[in-house]
Amino acid sequence: MTSRLEALCVEKGLKMTGQRRVISQVLSEADDHPDVEEVHRRAASIDPRISIATVYRTMRLLEDAQVIERVDLGDGRARYEEASADHHHHLIDTRTGRIIEFASPELEAMKERIARELGYKIVGHRLEIYGVPLDEEDERQ
Amino acid sequence: MTSRLEALCVEKGLKMTGQRRVISQVLSEADDHPDVEEVHRRAASIDPRISIATVYRTMRLLEDAQVIERVDLGDGRARYEEASADHHHHLIDTRTGRIIEFASPELEAMKERIARELGYKIVGHRLEIYGVPLDEEDERQ
DNA sequence: ATCATACTGAAAACCGTTCGCAATCCCAGC
DNA sequence: GCTGGGATTGCGAACGGTTTTCAGTATGAT
Image 1 (tube, rainbow over the protein chains, first blue to last red):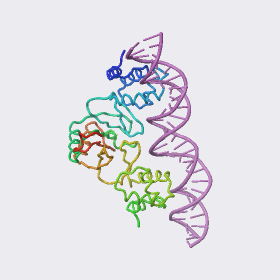
Image 2 (tube, rainbow over the protein chains, first blue to last red):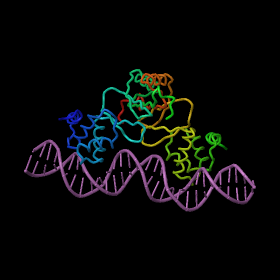
Image 3 (spheres, rainbow over the protein chains, first blue to last red):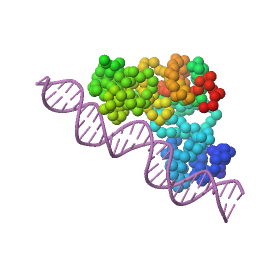
């Protein structure tokens, strides 16, 4: 079967190779924020002939085609998620590494306002919150 | 004379070597967000014997001592600014690379609220806005 | 099927950063 | 002041994530 992302790629006119099909499938099935190594691991379990270089290249291709989005969570490597229309941000649980997505129209509006007051038009932005669960806040790490 | 940051380092009990003095001076005089290479360039112009490895080590030392703060602006290298009590964020002019600092208590409050609603206590956060000047927004890059 | 073109795998190059080690410096104690 | 020993330095090598090079392979327009 054709994965969601594969359909999107075809739609955008990208040449579909076996590797790209597999990577698209992996990304379609992911509901987390895998890094390149993790995508490669999952892809290789479907077709072991896929090299990490190809994963890197494909991620870039898909990013440029706006099929996926790069997420920089400050851990020194790129993570990815499917592109989506709605802006959202990430709350990272520093205890477990769990990533929680959230959106806030008010926050978006406030950012727009701040930028406008500074004489700028927003072309991109990012917000990350690092936190610990409220009910564990006094525990030792 | 003793630079602002040098005094702070002494106060924190750090051993003051010639190199650290020079780097402290460079950072005290900086009103931008230099990366390690730039700090090294400026330090070397005062004392050419300073190696980049020492700059890296000293930046980490000063960061750990909370004398300076690391700023990750998504360009793949660490930038630094003097530590300050008030939270602020950065608007990056994508045309020129200029960095504008801004603070917004309302934004801080909103972030706190969002985290609390998700059941988390904030231990860190970061917000960057990338923008172009309003009066140039329709120009070609 | 054929063919030009685009893609792939493997290894090398890259870039920012850290580390290992021998030489050097700082400063507490004399 | 001088000294001794632990901290710091400079150098180059190593590192981790990412990009590139290049020869070989696959793709899909014809």
